[in-house]
Amino acid sequence: IEARAEGNQLSIVARGPQVHVMGFEIFVLYIVNELYFRRMDPAAALAEGRRRLAAKIASVQALATEVQRRHPFEMFDFGLRRRYSGDWQREVVRSFAAQAPQWFKGTSNVLLARDLGLVPIGTMAHEYLQTYQALGVRLRDFQKAALEDWVQEYRGDLGIALTDTVGMDAFLADFDLYFAKLFDGLRHDSGDPILWGEKALAHYVKLRIDARTKRLVFSDALTVPKALNLYRHFADRVMTGFGIGTKLTNDTPYPALNIVMKLTRCNGQQVAKLSDEPSKAQSTDTTFIAYLRQVFN
Image 1 (cartoon, helix red, strand yellow):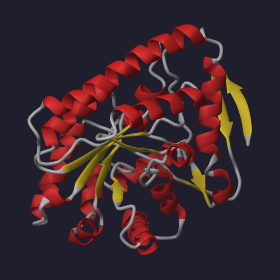
Image 2 (image 1 turned 45 degrees about the vertical axis):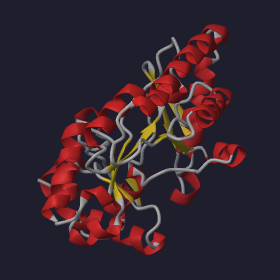
Image 3 (image 1 turned 90 degrees about the horizontal axis):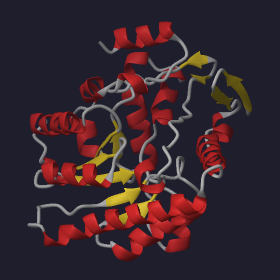
């Protein structure tokens, strides 16, 4: 792993066998975040963080007074990589688990899940799908190959598919009746969540599948109010889930860092993520991006 400064930006690159280096995304991001926020006033950060945390928990608890919908509200912590600190994430997760257990269903932090007796929750990552762009299958078929191998490996478990590696429309073109029946649902990570969700529901209707048996998981820059609004929009038509990250574990007076670590090359080949939000596209090779766009229209 190496780090180099480029103007006012820091670039960190991990190289090696994928199984050895893929975990650096988690550790590098949370270490950089915690070191950065140690420069701030901890008393002010924690005082305001606790005030905001109490407000979040209260807004979720208020669901008990609303008219019950077909499916329950379920949220989970996806805030490991960009947390304010390890101690603060533990406090946030413990507080939600103790005060809103009906709605708070787990965390992507496996250590916290073990320590606090919670369910470790995660979904398919962009890195997994991107890898198939360099594994020898025809580029146009990389998503179908990745989905097929996932099914063969997990045999019905971990059944939420990520949709935006090359955009939702291209994903749905590959997500036929076979995959729609095998997977439990879909995860949103870029673009307009309402538009995305409506496209997903229309796709299930087209395939003659009852969407009420499926789940839509939202995980893109969520806040608790945004998650609640999405829940109210969709909960009578489909099961939902909300993975809340930075705005759960790093909501203090100090602006959170916008940092990512993504796969850019595999087996000596360029790989890329196009996303449904142009600013989230990931690649260092504009020629490959143009080729990928052409292949997936």
